[in-house]
Length: 280
Image (cartoon, rainbow, N blue to C red):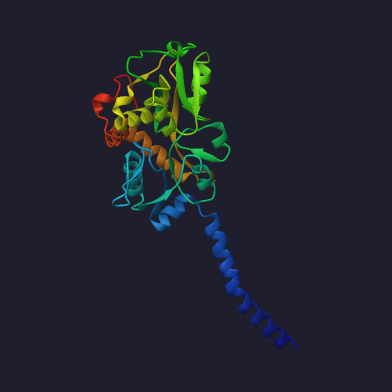
């Protein structure tokens, strides 16, 4: 009787073992940290944003991604002796892509409190100042120069450009459009005098549309926000620590600035178009 029971128990264990092992492997994969996954697969997954120069742009002929952040991603991947895998995304979707483990890094994100509820951030990649594209013949040096009823300011709805205009130029006429590209069209058509934009986006827009006017950094006050690299929130902080160390070194040597300038030049702008008081 005892021998029969032992044989049944052993048979049951033999049948159950494969499932138990599979379940254990699945649990290990589910809890694997980003650092361990990149180290194991030798692949760094990065969110890529179409039409977002100087950060990202997709070469339609080759299908390759180019831009300042692709150079940065490749340099980080070298630390792990890994390759970069780009996952097409948007600034709005990148947070969810990090949460659902579709990507490991999302470049050029402002660390807003709402985003910080869901993901974590690196040290600043750059401190990104805001300014304005001014139509030809229009002069302004600070926010108060725009804060007049006769000034028409175009912004994309719900963006930080929108927030800045409402806060610092509440007396101006606000022209609200849905997308940044529509703001450029509004300027081109003469329906606005000013387009509030973050510096990198403004220089990119002028590189593609030099007839728009000129870009100025607005003062009194200077409105600038950090632009960081987003990462998945997890107990293992090693990937973020590596990225932070990489940022400290490359900002300190000026390499981040060079990558960003190279990305700006891809838009058709030149170093001479970058305001002397713009530091990044």
